[in-house]
Length: 225
Image (cartoon, rainbow, N blue to C red):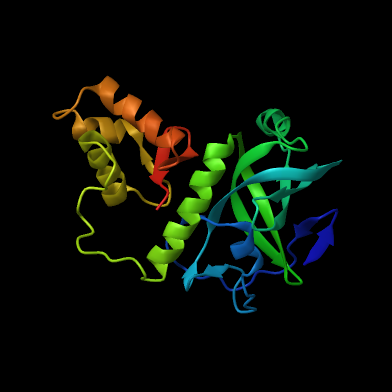
């Protein structure tokens, strides 16, 4: 593997774990604490493989390179280097959000080279301080969940704090999504006997805004946990 301007060129394929694609909310401290395993290029967190991650933090420094941007974000638990490649007009517009002091929510994959962890960013979203608080809380919750430190009396019990329509929509996603997510049109079709189409679409938008769902491609979404 070659390193260039903070990014990577992978020269050989490592063995990949063949698990379900996931999205984990991770703190920078968790990412920096990941131990490397030469038998696989898939990071392991809390004994589970992690294919995609979401981080949130303040941009502390950045530099433009010929293929995109290299920047650091700090989420109060530590810093991590991020790489964002501007391969088209959409990425170039998204890159305008990378400014020193900006608070960003980032989705991407972790790359490890010589024990150094870098986040290869796929999506960027400017957020406020509430999103950082929510993100760090989600990191703690998911850590407790994956390390079996949460009491789970009934995993099908409606989630506390969600309305009935929110619970029904989340259940549809959890039970039917695959690695490509689930198209909102399928959700509308499955729930149209219980709710109006506008109520379903508005609720999905709310779940997206509050990070309970995320976009995989277009109108295909997945649950965050």
